[in-house]
Length: 355
Image 1 (cartoon, rainbow, N blue to C red):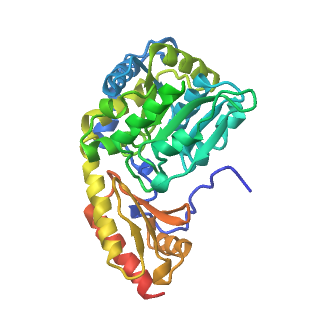
Image 2 (cartoon, helix red, strand yellow; image 1 turned 120 degrees about the vertical axis):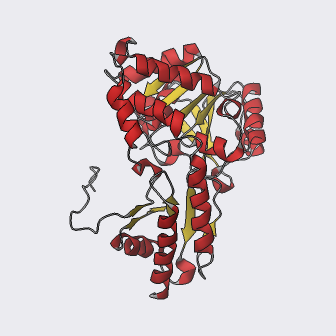
Image 3 (cartoon, one colour; image 1 turned 30 degrees about the horizontal axis):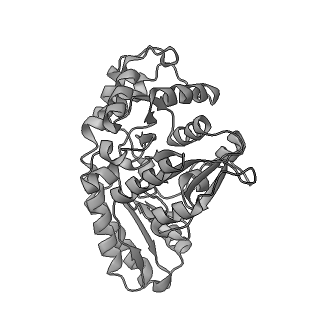
């Protein structure tokens, strides 16, 4: 087993349609120009004006006192838990949440935290499930310190946590002395889909962050926001984790461009996801979870094609998708057009017919 990612096989067919992830986006020409023009300084000493502007804008958008620019969304989550918790503390999250399933055990390895998985359909736990998992403070059990939600729920199918459920979870947490953290990997997808502002979506949550390297199309970065004291502690962990940067304004400029140009267009990705799901649903035997945002999960097994075989066959035709949690995941983004969606459906139909 090698942990190092292998370069793409040069003999593999060229990629024509990339539905692997919205992390596959390439900076748009205007974004590249903004990066080239960026005013920069030393971010480690607070002297990069473009980074500072980005943090001010995200803090305002999320309704928080302060924010800090991080190299990745994973580092946002890890630094947040390290700021909130101490070794032996307990965090509660859905069983498929990114902090459990996709961050390499960082929270246990670096902080010694226990993450208790909560069950629930579509990547979400119900407020009553959260309430039932709470226990009285006791020397026999770990202190329950933090509850985390992932908006949208990736493995759940890109589902959107309802505002009423988020508010109820906050109320339960505060009544029991827990802090609240929102993993905002696709938070703005949820906001565009529902019409609820990011400020309102994150209201009551002690911390929340926005990922810029997914649907927003920036090459790097996330910004986490919270109280000034919390962000001050996150800065300490950012330094310890090697996340403090120098002339990071070049990257921050891409994020600012994304805020100005790529937020409302997320609706296009959602429309493409619905078109893909609609087309796949018309193929006998394919089971499709109807998308709420830009993620489409489906299983072709009923059509006589195993998921991994379907992914491999599409790859040979220059279409990239991924297996995730036993299903195929297709992710729409700004580099995916309606024509690409139509072609993908046609290729899936062709593969099924040849099965």
